[in-house]
Amino acid sequence: MKFGRWLNSLTFIDHVIILLFFSISFWLAHLTMNGFRKLVERTNQNPYAQEFRSSPLILSVIAIPYTIILYRIFGLFLTELLKSTF
Image (tube, rainbow, N blue to C red):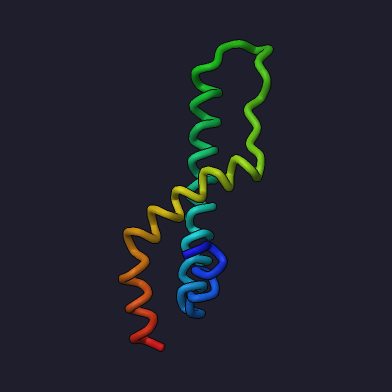
């Protein structure tokens, strides 16, 4: 199944869950980048070294695996819970 067909076959609840997981994943990616920045600052003793900067692309690249992992672990349970609730 192609990606576009898969997206069209999802229900509204599935879209909400994926959006929720993606939001959580961006928060986790932000924490990861902050932790990596602190690690680089702590280990780098060169006063002339460039500052470590993160871009939105790198943040997205880190967030996508987090989203996949969260969806694989909690996706089915959360989908069934929301379907039974609503």
